Amino acid sequence: MKRKIFDIIVIVITLFILYQIMIKKVLVYNSVSYALNLWVKNLIPTLFPFFIISDILINYNFTYYIPKTFKKICKYLFNITDNMITILILSIISGFPSNARNTRILYDKGLITLDEANHILIFSHFANPLFILTTVGTFFFKNKRIGIILLISHYLSNFILGIMFRKYFSHMNSITVSEDNKINFGNIFVNAIKKSIDTILLICGIVTIFMLLSSIINNTFNFNIYNSMIVKGLLEITIGIEALSNMNLSIIYKAVIASCFLAFGGFSVHMQVMGQITGTKIKYRYFFVGRIYQIILSAIITFIICLFLV
Image (cartoon, rainbow, N blue to C red; front, top):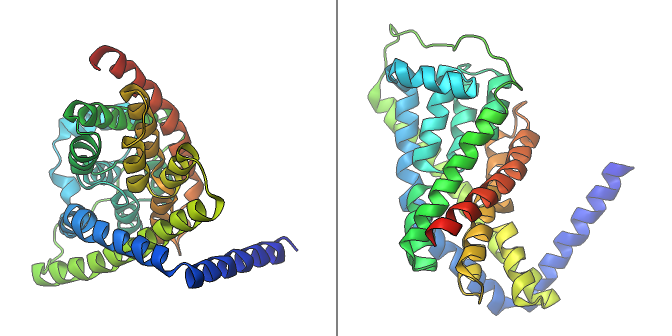
């Protein structure tokens, strides 16, 4: 019965969206154009190269070459295995949804267990540093200091989250790959490009749909600028932060709200994560719980830093 009710709700919402698309062609055109422009100018340059590099590093057992001292620090702070450290490092460098993507790759290869996959999803949700510093700080807020503050709070909230959940999971020794295996760089490189293209196209589709949903919802219900900004931020962080930057609010409040948007990621990012882990036993709920905790931590950290630096 519950399943039928859910199916009916999905059908009704889908038909409503289809109707809106048919009668609001200009709105649809502008939304899709904006999403594709964002994808080409922002997402491909900041994500696509990192996806390829991540695949190559994982196939060449990047974990083995991480300094032992760094591994010990991470294990002590977060109670994670060597292969989980690889996911954490690559997530910091490239940004979401690479955390879910790399978790899926290592899980499929048998290099991390289900328990480890669920654990690392909680605190490996990092926005691309270039996105925070350049797009958010410089382009949207026209304030490099805000970009730095958001970057610090975003990273710290994840690290604190990792410490908070260190005792929630227990792991065995990390699984390693035999060094005797012959590696064909050509095959690895080509496969990395193929998988990266699939991922970046999936991201394009999800971002476009959520941009369109945001436009339809705001246009249909005629929200005020504050509610409109919240809806945009919950669905897709880029348009949400852009709307926030144009509002007449104190820079401190803007920074705190922006940090919350970054911590949550928007349902667009949540769908990207779900798209990466679909077909596995990895649980989305761990990722979602992590984002709720991160919103609280990131907002507090941002507010404290802003009191002293803004």
